[in-house]
Each structure stands twice: as structure tokens, then as C-alpha cells.
Amino acid sequence: MIEGDKVLALIPARGGSKGLPGKNILELCGMPLLAWPIRAAKESNYIDQVIVSTENKNYADIARSFGASVPFIRPAKLARDDSTTYLVVEHALNYLKSQNEIYDYMVLLEPTSPLTTSKDIDEALKLLISKRDLADSVVGVSKVEATHPVFDVRINDKGLIEPYATENFSTFRRQEIEDLYHFEGSLYISDTKVLLKEKTFYHERTLPYIVPRWKSLEIDEMVDMITAEALINNKSLLNTDDLNG
Image 1 (tube, rainbow, N blue to C red):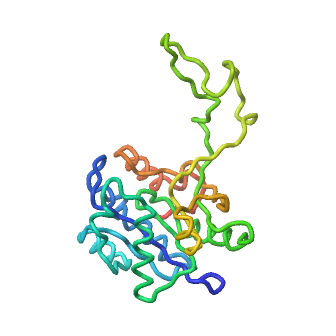
Image 2 (image 1 turned 120 degrees about the horizontal axis):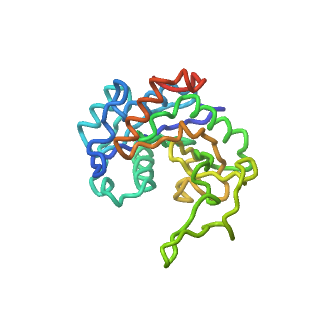
Image 3 (image 1 turned 30 degrees about the horizontal axis):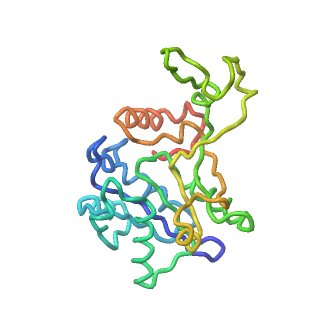
């Protein structure tokens, strides 16, 4: 609980993955990806219940073995490539409501963002609670650096490059460039009533939780797994102890 409000952590873990088969249970530093957000959520000071939503019974067994609850098997129609995250969230909240389990806040964590920690969860929750007059949700964002639009070019009809976001090929110093951020996908938190009303975590009352570039890594390809393992095994070089593992 946080200030008397109940907090649910939901971890969606679909069995199907075409790009990286079995992605959510691939082993990273001795634990399946699915276990990383479970551990982070269970170590949070504020989360009351940790639930995994999956259509895969093997994934369900793995989730339970790491301490998560799997109170239902997700319907197959909500585990397709085109199934939206919101529909998965809505299904979970409606199921829990049918069991007389009501939560004031939901924390959504993805197995593909294994570097998220309990500290991130708790800091983001505290940020949202401290600004409830201004916001109803908070999502992870990370600064756009090497791929900032001022460095982008397009290829024109002649096969030549031309600036994408500027009028000419000006040379910019990084400290002169406007800070921009991208949705990095590791952490989503919302008031549950607002979430069900808005059907999204993103709206005009959404706060940013700023995540450093190294921590915003998302597992899509095998190169991401290799990178994540290198980060975890060399966390002392990052000058931080804020990393599971």
C-alpha cells in the first residue's frame, strides 16, 4: 500500500514471439526474463499483489515458482500479435473485480525490460502520489541522444541525403540541443479508475519517470539479451548499485 491505497503489479507474458521465440522465458544471468519484473515488484515497498497474465500454462508455472500469482489463464483471443496491452489490462482488472479484489493503482511491468528495479517502481509511485493534483499516471521515458531528430537525414529522390528536421546541415553541440524524450516501455503506473476510463496510460495528465539510457534497454533481439547480460555483469562500471542481479 501507499498512503492507504492498494497497488497491483501486472506482468503480461504472452507465449508467442516470432522475433525471438520463447522470449519471455529466455534465461538472463540465471533467471528467465519473466522472473526479473516479478522480483522487482515483490521487492517493492508498496506493491500489494503481483500477478502475471499469460495464456501459456508453462509460463504460468514459471511465474508461480518465482512468487507471482496467476489467478487466471488469459484467453487466447487476448494473446494474439494484434492484442493490445490495454485489453490485457482491462481483462485482468475485470477478473479481479469479479473476485472482489479492487486496487487503487496499477503498475504494469514488461519482462522485456529486465533492468527495471524495485527502486524505480517505488520512486515512480511516490512521484505520482506527490503530484495527484496534476497527474493520474506516470510512464518511463528516456532522453533521445544519438538519434535526436537534428542528427537525422532523409534520402531524396536523387539518392542524396538532406536534413530531416532542420533547414541545412548545421553542426549542433549536444548541450545546445533541446532535450527530447521517448517512451522507453519499462514502467507504467496509473490510477485504475482513470486507466479504465482513458483506456491508456498516456494522456494529458501523465508524468514522466526519467530512465537513464542504459536502463531503458528493451529485449527484442538476441543482441539485446547479450547487451543486458553485459550490463548486469558489469554494473560496477556504471557507477550504480541500482540494478538487479
